[in-house]
Amino acid sequence: MLDVEHERIRERFPARVLPNRVLHFGECTQVLRGRNWIGVFDHPANSLDFYSDEGKALGTWDLTAMGFPWVQALAAHDDLLALGQADSTLIVLKVDTSRCPQEGREALLPLAVP
Image 1 (cartoon, rainbow, N blue to C red):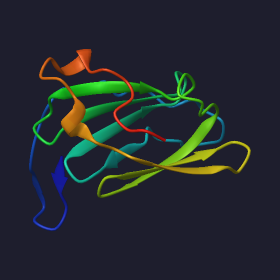
Image 2 (image 1 turned 45 degrees about the vertical axis):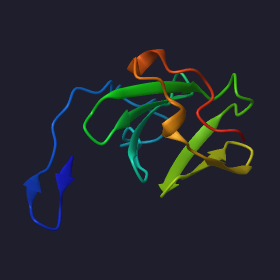
Image 3 (image 1 turned 180 degrees about the vertical axis):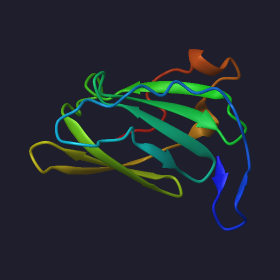
Image 4 (image 1 turned 180 degrees about the horizontal axis):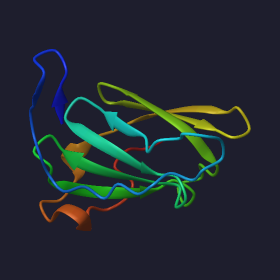
């Protein structure tokens, strides 16, 4: 994680970040920052991996299985997550990482109720 204001690296941790699907020129993998979590969007799989501020894997949301197919864009603010779908639908979910078990990637889905 970069601290842009102080021009330094704040944290380093391994995270699964795949190249994004190339629909147009120059897309990047979408990385989100919530209140106590970091999200990495896997566009080809339509899933979102969650990490703690320290880099601990918390779990993965399969967005298609949750009823949110064709997610194209995401945004986060505090404990809210916005999903923009290909059909111009916007969904806002509340993320509750306190419901994640201590085992990290074994976290049960969903972390929030839509």
